[in-house]
Length: 137
Image (cartoon, rainbow, N blue to C red; front, side, top):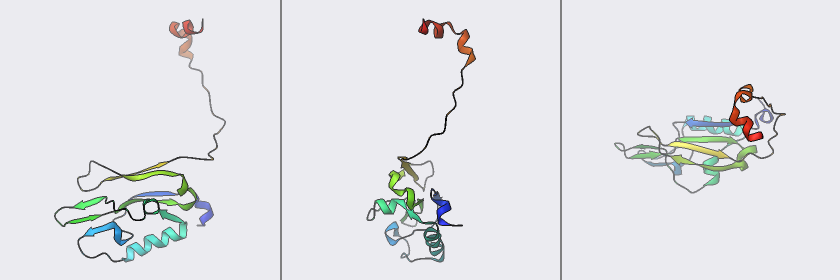
């Protein structure tokens, strides 16, 4: 699959891996894993970035917490195509219904998006609605 055919990719979820040491606190010492290498290889191949880390290179923001193990980590994140990363206006976390995970959020400001010709459909029931007709008279 070529990079050019995937210029608008967004992938997000619970990856169960931290990409950098800053994304982990507590537990055993952070070190790169084979799974992390697979994720970063995919990111390179598809021209993806960790958009949170790009926007906030030094910020600690954890999405998973285990009180028993005294561990916090950012294992839930979005990977976004570099070609659309500049359109991200917000990326962060918020409370979720899961007791040990936060929800991740991503908001875009779409630019240069083309609209189609559109479709207009008349609602025939308006012909029977007197209040509709009275507004026009």
